[in-house]
Structures are given as C-alpha cells and as structure tokens.
Length: 221
Ligand code: DX5
Ligand code: ZN
Image 1 (cartoon, helix red, strand yellow):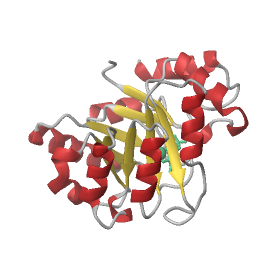
Image 2 (cartoon, protein in one colour):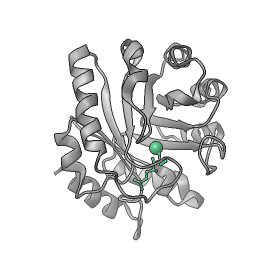
Image 3 (cartoon, rainbow, N blue to C red):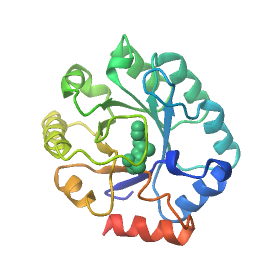
C-alpha cells in the first residue's frame, strides 16, 4: 500500500459519466474513491446515496469506497451503505446521538470506521472511542460544497490529531478534506496527514485519465 493515500472526491466528477470518471481516476493512480453524501439537513446540499454506491460496485469498481456521511441521523444510512458495498464509513459526531454505537455499527458491518471534525469542532469526541477509529477526518472547509478555500488553521489541528493517534498507538489514518491542492498537500503531510481528499483539484477540465494522472503524481511528489 502507498504511504500516502489519495482519495479523489467524486463530488467534482461529471455525474452524467460517473462510472467512466471513477474508472479513469483509478487508472490514473487514485487509491480510494471518496464518496460525499449530503442530505440537505446536516449540510445545505443534496448529493448521492447508497444506490449510487451499489451502482458503482455493479459497474465493476473494486477499489475502496470511502463514504463521508454529511447527514443526520446516521445509523440507517450506515446500514444501507454497508449493504451497498462501502469500504470506509465516516460521520460527524454531532450528527449521531450515540457515537460509540454508530462506530460499532460500522465495524460490525465489516467496514473501516471514522469520525469527521468540522473546522470549529474540537477533537474531544475522539477521546473515548480511539480504539474504534480507523480514520480521523479533519474538514479543512465547512462541509457542503466542493471548490472552497483551505482553512490554514487546520494544519495546527492536524498536528494535534497526529499526536493523539501516535500517543494512543492506534492504527488510524489521518485524513484531510477540503481545498487540498498540489500546492498545499506537502504542508498537510508535514503536519501528519497521511490520507488526502481532493475534489476540484483533480476533477477539472480536460477530464481525461492523463490529466488526472498528472495531478495525482504531482500530489505524490
Ligand atoms: C465537502 C466535501 C469534500 C469536497 C472536497 O463537504 O466533504 O469532500 O468534495 O472538495 P474540494 O477538494 O474541491 O475542496
Ligand atoms: Zn468529503
């Protein structure tokens, strides 16, 4: 496995050609597909659900699908995404009434589990569930939309999260999501991030496998 995981967010893909876009970005070297689920309740936008995840599986996509739930409540969709072929499921702690139970539900379904922290949210909710976390996801924008600017203060938070993970000695990825680009990914890595979501930085014109490959290679450089 790669030391650094690149997870393109299909939020910025061409939804009219989603299967092809996912195949192209994987052929271009992506490790994981980041799948943003928005419910127009927890966040002010509406995207895709379990049916689309299942459709990608039925289309022959075997790469890990990293489901980022921006929904409230979370448990019923966790169950549906497990059935739909998700590999990782992350949710925002304030969106669940029972964070430990929701994490356990994900793990019982055979998926990797993670918590997502909004820019202004402290890491406290991770403290008593560290042994259940495979992923800590830090939002470096306010969730809801692709193409927003990276919030630099999140580099400090990444260092704090890295310390938490290392001191606990757990096997947990530290992921950054929002405004990650070729020109700021190194700073994120230096702050301890080892899994990177990038939407608009990867999925842009000319939307070809070669172009995706060029961006992903530049991110790894
Ligand atoms: C935002 C989503 C992100 C988004 C990132 O709510 O969680 O995954 O797609 O897009 P960029 O990389 O364009 O900021
Ligand atoms: Zn996301």
